[in-house]
Image (tube, rainbow, N blue to C red; front, side, top):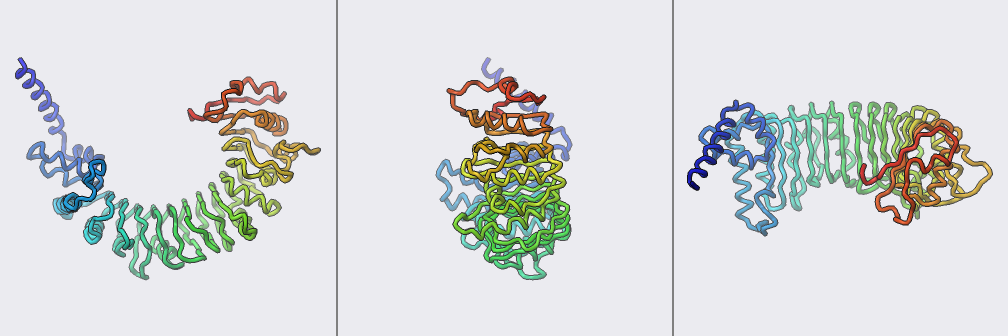
Length: 455
């Protein structure tokens, strides 16, 4: 009886396998493209037809952690690393010069850098369209200049802390549209611009945890539409000459100066700044940056950005196109920039306050809040056309409730208020419900209350 059951199960498995095998090669290869290369290669034992089929997959996803198995303490075994390198060599040899669309490679210290360079050159010569590299090159840190020469490459991501140091004429990426560099080190002030000049159709540039080896940089490109800069080190001066940029995400210690900010078509800006409070000169030129982005429709500000703006309130420009303003509040940062931001946004429709309503209470907060009693209340709010107010990280303290009443009283155009209650709010507070605030104002404002932890 047991043998009969095993035979039945075996026939069932073969039947399912036969149905998969009956699919056309193109469909099977498409399914394999969603597997790692090691997983795809494991199908070679199924039958003669499958033996070399994986070699024709047009997307390679190679990860040496699959071979190293750190949870089994095999990371230090040289034989495992050698097995990984031999495996990659065999896969590339089997593929020959067949076209390839995507090449993803993740490997750690101990893999021969010369072999890595050979693999990259192999796929470049075969016209790869998309390369994603996460490589620990150890103390070398340099990629071969061939990595930056391709007439087919459309998307390139390098997460290896590579040093960018190439000579004129040794870089050409004529069709590259998306470039991401994680922890890059630019050796001199000409390297970034040389890179951009070699990418004449680049649309998206993401520089994460940049290490500048110099003090001044000018970022110039007529084709960029999206730019992300997260700097690990501040610059003395940073210029933007990107007239067609639509979205800017800029995060770093405050540069001392922004000599040129050519961002006339910008639609969306995320500004996250940190400042050195002990150095008053830091942040004094930040208004130059904001004057350059005053055409934005959506503006997102970190607590540091709000703090730096608070030092130069009178220099805050008018944002004629701004319809959405999002600020992140902090108990350590005052709101002295808020009144001017609201008054200088004549078409603002949506205001989002993240991190709750708590902030540093000072006489300079102006009338945007009610933290200090003053004769003229809500003047900046009364002139602001905000229709929708969203508060995230709401704690439900008495002061917070008073702030909500302040907003309801002085935003004349307000139609909708959404309150997202902070997860872990003190249990002694009464439950917060939408109808809890109906009595706070006679205005016809629709109020919704949500659990922030569920969003």
